Length: 579
Image: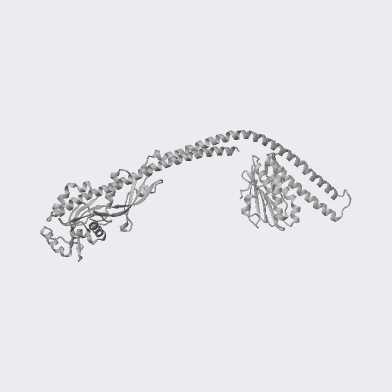
């Protein structure tokens, strides 16, 4: 009852703790999500803002290209020099224009470039095609930009972006590309803005294609672009990975700390699709738990542990107060029960043993002829009755010993004794039974005196039990060996047979009360299942130990180790330790 009350107190406290803990977790998750969304929005806005800035560059560049028919490469570079692109915009690889030409326009275009001082200007890659869009002017700021004369229209990704720019009339972002003169190349993207001839209509797609003069473009290093945006965001707790579906989903950018943050416990990872100037990208943001302060993240766990400690304390206090009262009551009851057990033990000693002893005496008198001469059949019947009564007395005695052990009422009367002589006497007592079963019983080491401090009565009971079991569970014509020797500060006693043996799986339980191992001879042997239990208890009361090694059909070896204590023994009697 006290446990139930304590559990109820604990359950109530735990429910309140879990409710508070859940609310705190929801609050922390909400704050974490808000911080994560803020960072994602900040980075996305930064990307859009930077591309808007590049759009402004392109509109100025496109206007210059459309107005000045005799524009030179030098004038193009001077126009962009005030922007200090290399310093202020390190992600820009180059700003240029590509002239839109039909195949018929190419000779005149090349002649004009030669007249402007570029006689070696060529269009690459070479070859016949209906449309050419060579780089006409290019302000170059990195090693991975398109060179003069390169026809970007021959590249499928650039081609698609230019077509989309004309068809929509808007600035268009290309998929990820590698620059024509990359060394080595890193992924980059192009922003294309169509440039139309002056005073030409450009309302419809057909009109735009008809009046198309070329494309102003800016080439951007993807990694440098994203790193710049992330650095501007001033947070090392958010990372980004970008995949370009137009190139088969290849990863075109990944923050240096992305894998680390993604693997963190409690990291928030989310993938979404975004479109920039007509080009779709798959963006995965990984937010570290450190987006919010450590103190705030620890609040739910701290509340949980404090609540659990409080619940345990109050439940334990209630349990202690109730059990303290019950403990006193239980102590009184135990004393009453122990008294009743002692009375029952006394009753069993007199009421069970006395009748059996009387039966033994009367049967013995009949066998001795006090009631006259008996027939052979009567003698056999009386012998059977006598043996049955003896077995009953043995069982009663064993049960009484078990009761005394459990009640702690067995007291050893220790004295010095010759354990070798005791073992020889026990073996001698079983010679008739051994001869009857045509077995052989061999003793070793019993000829030398080995004194220890022990209770002779209980130690004899132990040895008697082991030898008796060996005789019972060894088939006819089997062999039994009992041996004793000294090893360091202990005496080893072994009882070995070649009988039915014990399965290794069952060996752990043979020393338990009321345990018997089933085998081919167990049905012919009477027993209470407490013999080996008593043996182990008595050996341990002497400060020793007992072990068994056995296997089915190959016999058993029981080994008792008993301490010698401080009894002096002739060193010549010492034998090496054997296991």
